[in-house]
Image 1 (cartoon, helix red, strand yellow):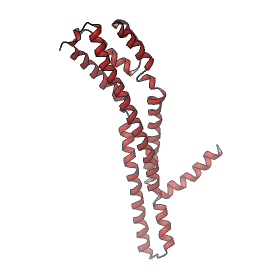
Image 2 (cartoon, rainbow, N blue to C red):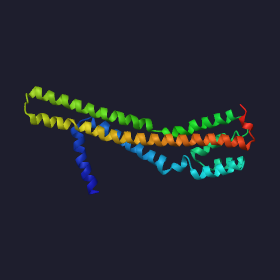
Image 3 (cartoon, helix red, strand yellow):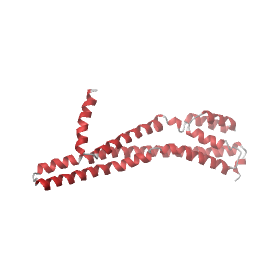
Image 4 (cartoon, rainbow, N blue to C red):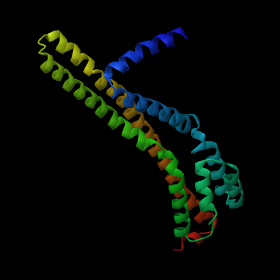
Length: 220
């Protein structure tokens, strides 16, 4: 507890030196950290709620035997995103392939929106944070040169010290932006892979439904 208190005591003076621009950067850092934790929980810790491998193996076995009703029951019991997509397609078993495909695509669009949740915000934070940092530095430089011109200060030490303080915001902005951007790219990659998995299973489902229904689903 003492270490945390000491860290906070050293942090607040740095924020104060950076000026008002530091506060939006701090808020962006909190938002980015919260989004990263939420996406880690959803995409990594609870990845089985997106594309559960064990569930898909069971559904694949049922469809391989032509047991469509049993596969529907499995989808109803499972609460994953993939289960809801497959259920949408299985609900139209025996219908033309185009109908099944449309049902799968509609369900896929609805479900995959969850994969991209907050990623746009994380990307925006990665772009805005360094801009705020540069803004704070420019404002600090303007203030420094204004004071020098008004007070006729000529010492290099005063100028160097002022620049040193003005650069706090640039450093803070980059400290927030770099992890936010890396996290955004990582989560976007995971989302793309999950989306591709769901598309592959949707195509596989249509093929298995065609076999299970004796090719009736091939009709347009």
